[in-house]
Image (spheres, rainbow, N blue to C red):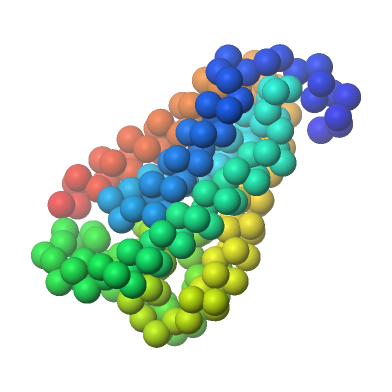
Length: 199
């Protein structure tokens, strides 16, 4: 999408700072708080990319920087939670779906630490637990920070850019905010339904 074309787009129905703030908050909750693991971060990034490509007061670069910072910080919080309180989490009688996610995270980290941290964001239900399990393990903080930074950049850039390019589709151009919000809400509803069904 050219710079000239982007300047001809309409203004967002909501303040850009509000949109960036909600994006950052939801990613922080999903990646930094275990209870937010069922949030659909992939669809959130797609929706944010669609909005960035549909309104002139939003930009893909701002979306990418905001989301990358939130993703990175959320995983760092998860690492600290695991380091300080991880044993409490694993001792609790957790629901089967949470126990399954914890065990998968442990297995992946045992098989390949660095690649797992880098690419775990692409696996829903796992990206919230890998940092926590990593914090419990013998993984060095410096190594986790590097892998987390690379993983956050790749995940956010790829998915938000796909959403940005999707904004050029005529059907999406006609109602970008409705489609982006519907995409996120439908995926959120499906995730929440699956969570409670598995309890």
